[in-house]
Length: 142
Image (cartoon, rainbow, N blue to C red; front, side, top):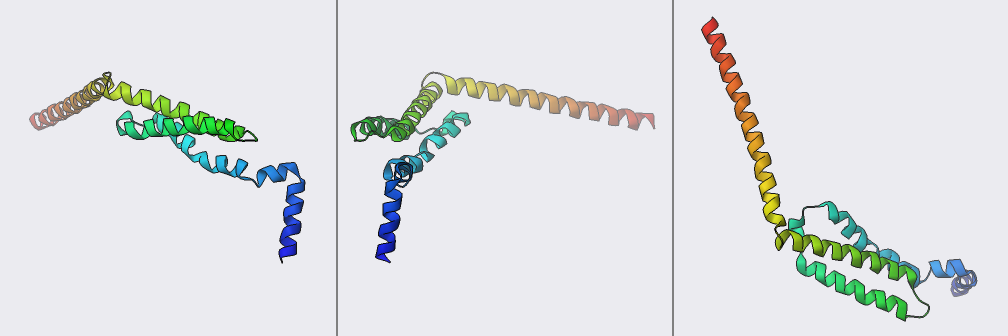
Protein backbone atom coordinates (compact mmCIF):
# COMPACT_ATOMS: atom_id res chain seq x y z
CA UNK A 1 0.00 0.00 0.00
CA UNK A 2 2.80 2.42 0.91
CA UNK A 3 4.46 1.75 -2.44
CA UNK A 4 1.24 2.62 -4.28
CA UNK A 5 0.93 5.90 -2.37
CA UNK A 6 4.57 6.73 -3.12
CA UNK A 7 4.04 5.98 -6.81
CA UNK A 8 0.91 8.15 -6.94
CA UNK A 9 2.72 10.99 -5.15
CA UNK A 10 5.64 10.75 -7.57
CA UNK A 11 3.21 10.83 -10.52
CA UNK A 12 1.47 13.94 -9.13
CA UNK A 13 4.73 15.73 -8.30
CA UNK A 14 6.13 15.08 -11.80
CA UNK A 15 3.39 17.22 -13.41
CA UNK A 16 3.83 20.88 -12.44
CA UNK A 17 0.11 21.68 -12.81
CA UNK A 18 -1.01 18.77 -10.66
CA UNK A 19 1.76 19.56 -8.19
CA UNK A 20 0.41 23.13 -7.84
CA UNK A 21 -3.20 21.95 -7.70
CA UNK A 22 -2.37 19.52 -4.86
CA UNK A 23 -0.38 22.08 -2.85
CA UNK A 24 -1.30 24.48 -0.07
CA UNK A 25 -0.36 27.32 -2.43
CA UNK A 26 -3.60 26.54 -4.25
CA UNK A 27 -5.96 25.14 -1.61
CA UNK A 28 -5.15 27.72 1.10
CA UNK A 29 -6.34 30.69 -0.97
CA UNK A 30 -9.11 28.67 -2.62
CA UNK A 31 -10.66 27.83 0.74
CA UNK A 32 -10.05 31.37 1.97
CA UNK A 33 -12.04 32.92 -0.91
CA UNK A 34 -15.25 32.48 1.11
CA UNK A 35 -14.42 35.61 3.12
CA UNK A 36 -14.17 38.04 0.16
CA UNK A 37 -17.16 36.45 -1.54
CA UNK A 38 -19.23 37.08 1.60
CA UNK A 39 -17.90 40.65 1.84
CA UNK A 40 -18.86 41.40 -1.76
CA UNK A 41 -22.31 39.85 -1.23
CA UNK A 42 -22.82 41.96 1.92
CA UNK A 43 -22.38 45.21 -0.01
CA UNK A 44 -26.05 45.17 -1.01
CA UNK A 45 -27.31 44.68 2.55
CA UNK A 46 -28.39 47.38 4.98
CA UNK A 47 -25.35 49.19 6.47
CA UNK A 48 -26.96 49.03 9.92
CA UNK A 49 -25.82 45.40 10.29
CA UNK A 50 -22.13 46.12 9.54
CA UNK A 51 -19.80 45.52 12.47
CA UNK A 52 -17.16 48.25 12.56
CA UNK A 53 -14.75 46.27 14.72
CA UNK A 54 -14.95 43.15 12.57
CA UNK A 55 -14.54 45.18 9.39
CA UNK A 56 -11.41 46.82 10.79
CA UNK A 57 -10.02 43.45 11.93
CA UNK A 58 -10.61 41.83 8.54
CA UNK A 59 -9.05 44.80 6.72
CA UNK A 60 -5.89 44.57 8.84
CA UNK A 61 -5.82 40.77 8.51
CA UNK A 62 -6.00 40.96 4.74
CA UNK A 63 -3.37 43.70 4.54
CA UNK A 64 -0.95 41.59 6.60
CA UNK A 65 -1.53 38.49 4.49
CA UNK A 66 -1.18 40.41 1.23
CA UNK A 67 2.33 41.21 2.42
CA UNK A 68 2.87 37.60 3.48
CA UNK A 69 1.78 36.33 0.05
CA UNK A 70 4.57 38.36 -1.55
CA UNK A 71 7.17 37.45 1.10
CA UNK A 72 7.01 33.66 0.75
CA UNK A 73 8.94 31.84 -1.93
CA UNK A 74 7.57 31.11 -4.44
CA UNK A 75 5.26 34.11 -4.35
CA UNK A 76 1.63 33.16 -3.91
CA UNK A 77 -0.31 35.40 -6.30
CA UNK A 78 -3.57 33.55 -5.70
CA UNK A 79 -3.33 34.30 -1.97
CA UNK A 80 -2.43 37.90 -2.76
CA UNK A 81 -5.47 38.25 -5.02
CA UNK A 82 -7.76 36.72 -2.42
CA UNK A 83 -6.61 39.13 0.27
CA UNK A 84 -6.55 42.11 -2.10
CA UNK A 85 -10.21 41.53 -2.95
CA UNK A 86 -11.03 41.03 0.73
CA UNK A 87 -9.12 44.14 1.83
CA UNK A 88 -10.81 46.37 -0.75
CA UNK A 89 -14.22 44.87 0.06
CA UNK A 90 -13.71 45.41 3.78
CA UNK A 91 -12.52 48.97 3.22
CA UNK A 92 -15.68 49.60 1.19
CA UNK A 93 -17.74 48.13 4.02
CA UNK A 94 -15.85 50.38 6.45
CA UNK A 95 -16.73 53.41 4.34
CA UNK A 96 -20.38 52.34 4.33
CA UNK A 97 -20.27 51.86 8.12
CA UNK A 98 -18.75 55.30 8.74
CA UNK A 99 -21.09 56.94 6.27
CA UNK A 100 -24.12 55.37 7.91
CA UNK A 101 -23.24 55.83 11.59
CA UNK A 102 -21.01 58.93 11.60
CA UNK A 103 -21.78 61.06 8.55
CA UNK A 104 -25.59 61.31 8.52
CA UNK A 105 -26.49 58.24 6.50
CA UNK A 106 -28.67 56.82 9.25
CA UNK A 107 -30.74 60.00 9.52
CA UNK A 108 -31.27 60.12 5.76
CA UNK A 109 -32.29 56.46 5.75
CA UNK A 110 -34.76 56.95 8.60
CA UNK A 111 -36.20 60.04 6.90
CA UNK A 112 -36.69 58.16 3.64
CA UNK A 113 -38.38 55.25 5.43
CA UNK A 114 -40.67 57.65 7.32
CA UNK A 115 -41.71 59.37 4.09
CA UNK A 116 -42.43 56.02 2.43
CA UNK A 117 -44.52 54.88 5.41
CA UNK A 118 -46.37 58.21 5.48
CA UNK A 119 -47.21 57.86 1.78
CA UNK A 120 -48.41 54.30 2.33
CA UNK A 121 -50.53 55.41 5.32
CA UNK A 122 -52.04 58.29 3.34
CA UNK A 123 -52.82 55.93 0.47
CA UNK A 124 -54.50 53.45 2.80
CA UNK A 125 -56.47 56.25 4.47
CA UNK A 126 -57.73 57.58 1.13
CA UNK A 127 -58.75 54.03 0.10
CA UNK A 128 -60.70 53.61 3.34
CA UNK A 129 -62.35 57.04 2.87
CA UNK A 130 -63.38 56.06 -0.67
CA UNK A 131 -64.84 52.78 0.57
CA UNK A 132 -66.76 54.59 3.33
CA UNK A 133 -68.20 57.06 0.78
CA UNK A 134 -69.23 54.24 -1.57
CA UNK A 135 -70.85 52.32 1.30
CA UNK A 136 -72.69 55.47 2.47
CA UNK A 137 -73.95 56.19 -1.05
CA UNK A 138 -75.18 52.62 -1.41
CA UNK A 139 -76.96 52.86 1.95
CA UNK A 140 -78.58 56.20 1.04
CA UNK A 141 -79.45 55.01 -2.46
CA UNK A 142 -81.47 52.05 -1.17
